[in-house]
Length: 321
Image (cartoon, rainbow, N blue to C red; front, side, top):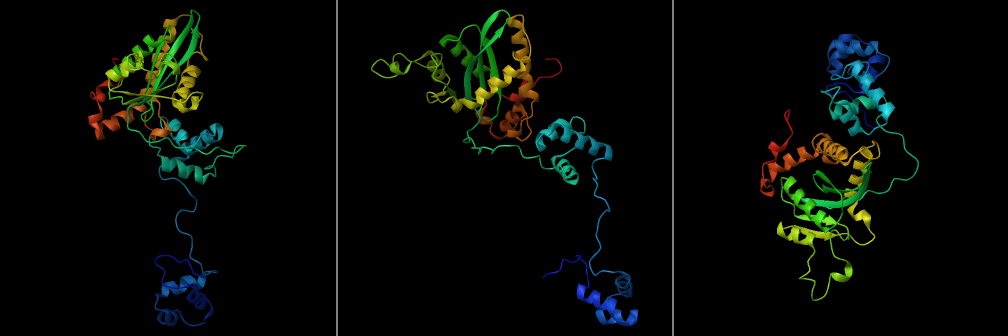
């Protein structure tokens, strides 16, 4: 069986054992084994032949103070958040905290792994990689004291940049206006939009074929053609195909109409705009490796400027916007 020795060791465990057992002088032993007299004296005073442990006696951080480690441990045990979510939640309080120092801290305190939850985890399937500019679009109903509104939502599959607009009706005219507003909002070129088979986005299946199909192109398709956008449709009865925007709909509802009561449509419009701005410019997403959607857009701008209509850096909100 091999021995694990210190990198600068001049003796093996067999030599150390012989040094401890032989009754010869220190000078003679040093000459015999080709080491210094100090090494002979050191091993004769020890009870074992193993190298002594190196490093500090107690594991500690060179970056974090004990108080900061206590904050991290308490935060992890109280929230049970994953590593990246803990990092994003703690960095405003501990700016010098990095992902590696956080992981080492959790390792030292034995809480680096979250407890397993009941039930088997479904296998995750990765989305196909698409360049920036693939938009998912959907409609949801919301209500205020004044009545019902239709929430049009779009989200980019790659950058997660979101756009939302409230309309009093959901028809081909409002859907087309929403697409025009989306094109004006996004600083890069949109190459594909994915929608369901609603009448706001396409004709009924019976009207999609036949000799008059080319002359009766849907208004939404005409707007797509005008801006060079490919319009794709989900399979009928397969809403999960458009799951990204379905999830964004739920996120918006949880932050607005499911949490607050709105007396007027205007109150909801103002709050919706504030939430979408906070999401795009301040929400750090794990799927983007800790970047916000707009930080990811700026990152793509530096690598692929040919995909952009304009420089997105001037669109970042400042103190006077």
